[in-house]
Image 1 (cartoon, helix red, strand yellow):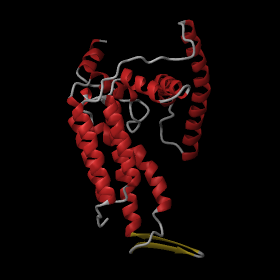
Image 2: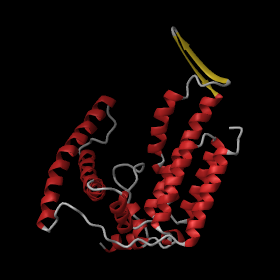
Image 3: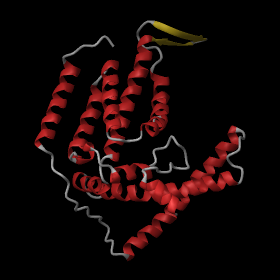
Image 4: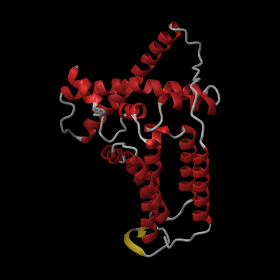
Length: 282
């Protein structure tokens, strides 16, 4: 116990046993509650509005150069906040696979100079320079969005985040968000314990793809069944403690400062100028 306390006090937090490529909610919560850098003192409303601006920017932008520049800026912000860079690059695996699964369908037969071509009877696939640019652009856009989303979550305390959700979203959507965030910790711990039990019985050894897929399908099904049972018990425990069906988040959120207003206006103006008035070669 003393060793565990010392590790946590030094800022060393154990990653989830599920996979190093899955964002660790315990680690995210630890940084959001214990951070002390300048970015932790910025109003959560400012960071939320900036997240909306970044999402709009990556949705409208078609330039690889702008996507790379945005990603580098967000990565610098993430690093200056004292957040774990190594973990970030591990967490990129999920957005990378997601984008790759989409791009493998969209990047073929794009207009441009051919790079690679595959022809079979009645069907042909051609990879062009524009198809490759499309893949790189989508990757950097996704990395920028994921990095800033993690930056927002890891520099904003949970009580501020819950109060923002409570004020922005209507009932019962706000309750679904708030309860899901709390319950997902319980579910992940349950899955983690099942994965440990599976590995202790030899389930982590190399087997055929069919056998491994069947194993993890059984774990997923068991997780769904146990989650319903656990949710019912959690609900009964909350009702026994006076829960009436509505979670009220009344935390006072820090207001947006004058400098933050000016910064957001400058960023929005620059984004509009770059998208509509500046033309990049690619």
